[in-house]
Length: 288
Image 1: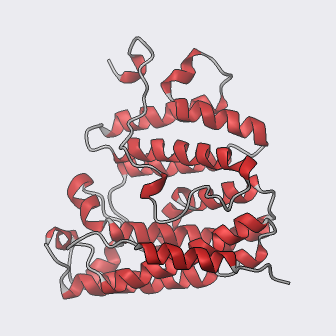
Image 2: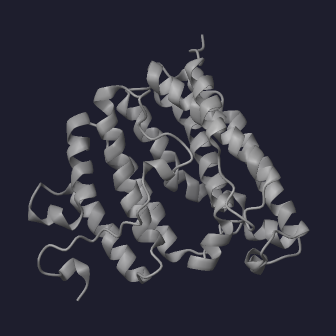
Image 3: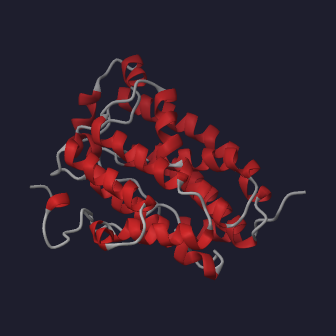
């Protein structure tokens, strides 16, 4: 009997203990309009719970897919006893009803997490960017739609969210391989450097793996450059300032990853990075 069939309304969620404070970027910070923060947090909690299911080292792939499918179903159902299966999905449904934002962004991230449950390797950069289209881009699109922003902002937002996703993959490249046998580093990049995924088991990055990491960071810098077009396009002042801060954080994390070795220790942002990025956000201005 799976948890979906269990008596007593057992939740299908598999929380990892991670929260908003564990992210590389602010999630619904004080810069965001007060009345919208609860909806930003609802989306984060929904995505965090789905991500935790997909990343669970103890759940089988089929069980992960059933749980994620149930979260998708709750989004579309009327409120009822089944909501206890996933309080995060039920809260997200209520948020969507209150704001009028489409459920599509939620379904898109669920698509990515279903992929995480079954796909362990990525062929090339385009394959990775297709994954980011569903795992990362919907996060920015959800925030923009919440604020009633023009969809002209989507390309720059997609670039920013994809950059953040790749940077996170680079931070966690060794842990993802060791815990889940999942590798986001494109196989063609590894092959071009003359190595395989086994290079991720070393205590420190080899020269060949360093070449792969630097190549991916170079491509990510291109995404960050495209993302700089986002803050001037955003009408809402708070979201404009938060997006400018996140662009600055992405650039700072990329620089730290150039200098650091994610196999030796997790490369992460420092307090000074957050302080400098928030200052950059506060100074952000709308474009013409």
